[in-house]
Image 1 (cartoon, helix red, strand yellow):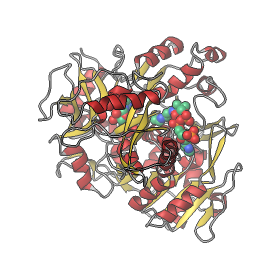
Image 2 (cartoon, protein in one colour):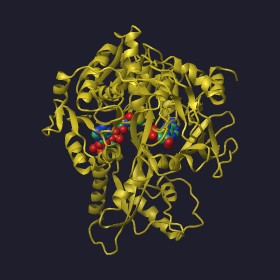
Image 3 (cartoon, protein in one colour):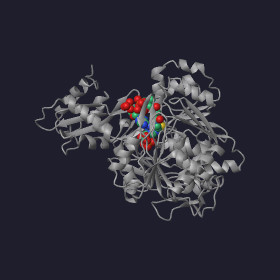
Image 4 (cartoon, protein in one colour):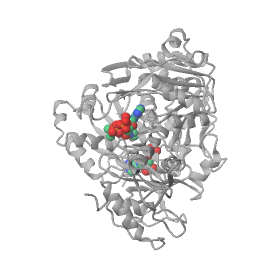
Length: 634
Ligand code: COA
Ligand code: AMP
């Protein structure tokens, strides 16, 4: 079939220079690139080498120079503080330039790292863009992580400055951030030179003299800083994401390729253009927030929305409809779990009737598979196309989608549609041989990855190669398994590693096991993701205790749960664990997590031929039944 999608896809794969070069011309460059795709150092591919530009200039100043400085760039909508505030491109540029001056005065230079540990407030975005303005590398850490996780990131990124706020607000709870920050700095080996703290009136933080500085004080005396040209291949940010161990992976994003790919994606994938209102209801701590709350919409001259609230409870399940109607949102992006939460509280979507949603054209979902029930509910009630699309922190933008600006393919429930231009997606067997359509295998992407994707892991080329490039030579391993049907629709079924998706948040069960194993009475443990009606998946823990332990199991379980909360964070949603006598294993000692998961989710499973002792599975079924999982649940 010939359509804009087919033409774009074909050119992007067969002649990437001819595809991405003209797209890059639409951006502002101080110096034009020498090469669009630089493959001189395989398997490390680089885009737009030789080019010089500035991400912040392209997000803000360019629009002012083009005469749309008075357009609204950002709407801050915070039901939790009852605040709404708008910034034009001029307003936002001025704030960002001032904060860039603050950072420069604190000795932050091109290439230095700045950690941003903040709630969903405009100052978080201002800090990110200010880093980009002076060529510093930001690393945003999600607020739901515990001090220990923040400390790990501080040790890896070694920031000169940390920017934080006195507190976050979770529905009605005020969460003080400063004690977590202080604890993290105490735990970390690498210490920042200074911290800039934005004081919120709900909870004032105590500042440590000589190290901590008040945001407002510094802004009051700051000199605006201009944009600093950086190389297209210089890093813009590091975003840590769960790996298969407790050590998170520092995904690096460069400046040039990121700008080009995101600007293109706004129109081609999301169907929006300059002047449109675009809303990603995510958090700036996640990749969705980086790409589609901050950078993508601003590169395109859209109005972006920073929403400090939840889909439900702030104040009710009509919150999303209110935001869409009030700000004239054309295209929205969130995780399916948000819609499951709305559907659970307002199954007939009665609260929608109070709002005029006529400007709303498309809903995009990602972060986890969109289950057909949620898809149908959203389609029936909102009456706009509902587009599932698939991507990862590593990729920075969608690998598979129904590209609404190119061609609208019929939706097949359970599939994020087709590979986006730039992505040569294939399904292969363990020997890297392509499998037949419809057959399940490892989903891989033929190298080179398109612009805007991870060029490496922060100061760790070796781990980058080992984690993503080694298993399937010539391909990027997505660590997702699935299949592609006869018509090229991709189906993403499951992760091939220990990553789980809890309410759209990516977590490692291996990291939770590392924490549980440190409980003095736990001899062995296993954590796996089991189905959950609201969050998609939740972690479930199995503990085998040391011989002779007489303490109450309830007490040990409570302590274990608290340990995960304290060391990983509340976002892990680790709330259920059970004590078992032993874990089912293969004869070579591998824990049969997949089999246990199938038992918990009431799914059919084959008793593995290599199992050490099949009788253990009955014990596991009993234990799961007692905590409400599996066929034996009451
Ligand atoms: N700062 C501090 N704590 C945070 C936090 C933050 N930024 N974000 C979450 N938490 C805490 C929550 O308060 C909660 O703590 P609790 O155990 O004390 O209740 C815990 O982490 C789990 O949070 P969450 O997973 O958000 O669950 P929830 O029950 O509060 O809300 C949903 C459930 C579905 C409404 C919510 O997860 C949601 O809106 N998800 C949208 C998904 C999303 O944006 N994904 C990003 C990728 S697109
Ligand atoms: P994250 O890095 O947090 O974006 O998580 C990436 C992982 O989430 C992917 O590897 C998938 O396992 C899962 N994921 C994201 N989007 C989808 C989707 N649309 N369908 C299925 N799985 C998805």
